[in-house]
Image (cartoon, rainbow, N blue to C red):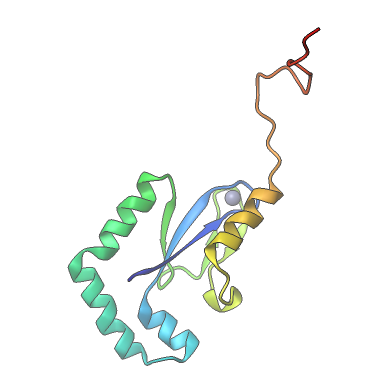
Length: 121
Ligand SMILES: [Zn+2]
């Protein structure tokens, strides 16, 4: 299984699907060697799993990032996003998503303000 985490930008809400090759994860976590991870990465690449994940992420509007190539990502809005998995220790994806949902308060346009349209007498 390819390791892909989704990071929403806390500033503008753009979502990034970040692929962490096992060679990188093994080295960061110390659970294996870079060589072990690289063999698994090549296997996943050959099987097309990474390409499939990339297409799926982009189809849902996410921006695809390879963490092995990009450690410091600057969002299009100018916010710096930290992709170092070591700085996000074992955070379940659902928690990240839930956090993002709380931070943004979006008022839908064209609704005529917070009136009470459901009033009936
Ligand atoms: Zn942003």
